[in-house]
Length: 237
Image 1 (cartoon, one colour):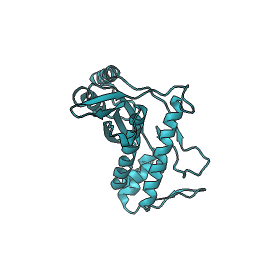
Image 2 (cartoon, helix red, strand yellow):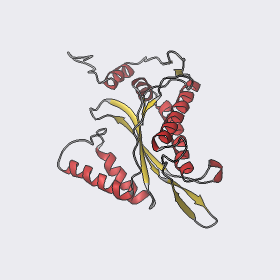
Image 3 (cartoon, helix red, strand yellow):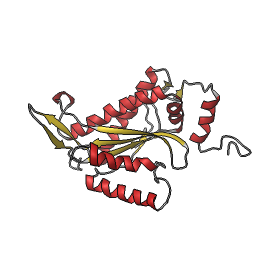
Image 4 (tube, helix red, strand yellow):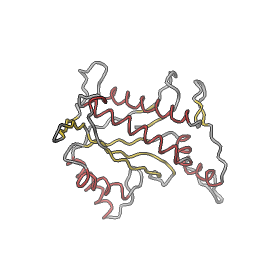
């Protein structure tokens, strides 16, 4: 999921671009991990998505040794350039954004499994914060593995209920619309968090960050976010 803007909810502009992925089974994840590890063994370089050598190994470890025997859905959340700059320079803001995203997405598999937050049903997730893109550009983004469903706890045991796939028969809730609603909700939540911290002014016409890049390190960070050379004879290109 790509947050392509942070206009307030009242704005008529689109807040996000959307790519729909179906849930991955444990077998699918193992096959993907095998393919990626084979690339590494043949020295074909970094993971094509973001250059993370350890990411694939970590995902395989989580599936095999941490997650229970249940289907897993992966979410990848990236941000527009201004927010990348802010989250790279303000770790506390990134922590708060992560907490909001984690809570927001957790409601999705619980609801799709037929429960509400008040029911006591729980899901599980692991999030890896990745700071670089495939070109080693500074690009804070989130890799998240969520159980594709929810556990309902009884007196002695817990029973897993798989999340139901949205279909075109659901009124206004086809697969694309369900995830679009989730992404819109995340956008609104992130905007509110950054507004409360005084880091974002969500002007309806021209939203902007209330953030001063004071240190030299922060100024150096800004260049690789925009895929530009920091120093040397080609600086700025």
